[in-house]
Length: 161
Image (cartoon, rainbow, N blue to C red):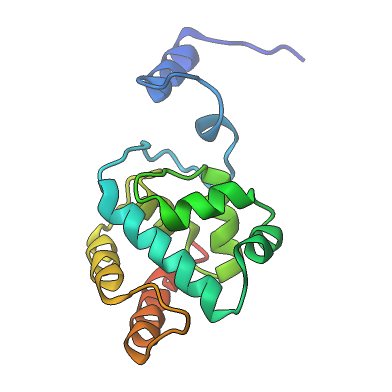
């Protein structure tokens, strides 16, 4: 068996990796990457909504940050950063694992975090409205519960795609 590396193949890879500091990782190893270009178009709004969503889902399930980190097999420090730091861009694996634990679309969470360019960006606006309605309190208020349930529905649409 002969492996042939053509100029066209190399050129395609170079174009896919253009602008990256390191040319390994998501584009070559992530099982959910489908060729969308990684961008950070949503800035702090998407990251704020992601942090609120993760925080509320964790609280709804009665989990501490270490408990959720263990369930999702992710780093406690990264989970804490997602919830508390609106400028923290999480690792792709972290977002994927959290989506699996919560049963929502990994692609939509990736888009929200700025790790992927979503094909339909309307849910990002929904996410910002969701984040605006939620406040950090011990128990979920009726309004937070309603907002969370609505956002879960949006994130769960096409979760298997």
